[in-house]
Image 1 (cartoon, rainbow, N blue to C red):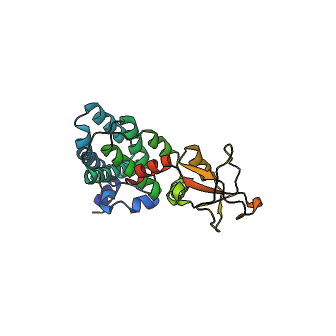
Image 2 (tube, one colour):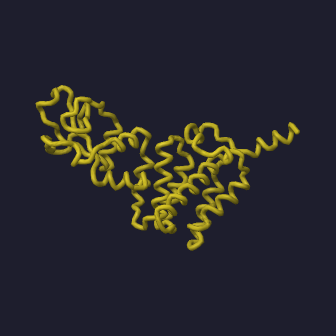
Image 3 (cartoon, rainbow, N blue to C red):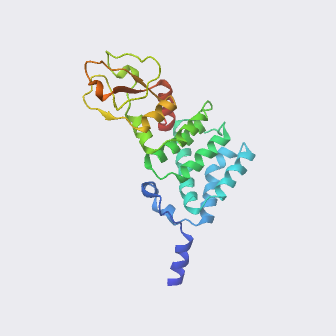
Length: 237
């Protein structure tokens, strides 16, 4: 009996190291054998690969090359993405196949819950929107949890208040940022702010000079229209 239990344990999936992401996955997924996962994965992707046989072979090869823990997370993520896409509308084969496979691989390795949810949503979005831009996948692959959380906090240009102005040139030498003009709470400027600016997901405006001390070097950080479109893609709005 003990030997049988040991054999069963060796067949189950080791999700050690996946942290909070593993907690979000149903416990029954943990004890799936590799063969069961492959069978399950083939059924899940069948509706999105049946019209493109080459894509079906490609994504299954990627799946076969994953370690068991990644297969568990990947199969579960694809299933949730398909379900979300079906709730939103017609299920389509993704237009940009390499971007879809890259999203699948990234989701299978992502341990941060916020980023994993974004990868799940970006997979679903590619099954819905034929106009989905593959650059979103590249942007998200450069994100840490800090960039994701910061982007979710930002206001739009219309929401940052009045009495602000633009800069001459593209200054980036700030110590603090606020979410709205006249905000008293100063947030520390971090590298995550630079990342959002680099990908044109956020921009800055000069606050009223009379409100803040010059030595604090404060700016207003807000989400751009490109940032809103990207956020809609990764939050499935």
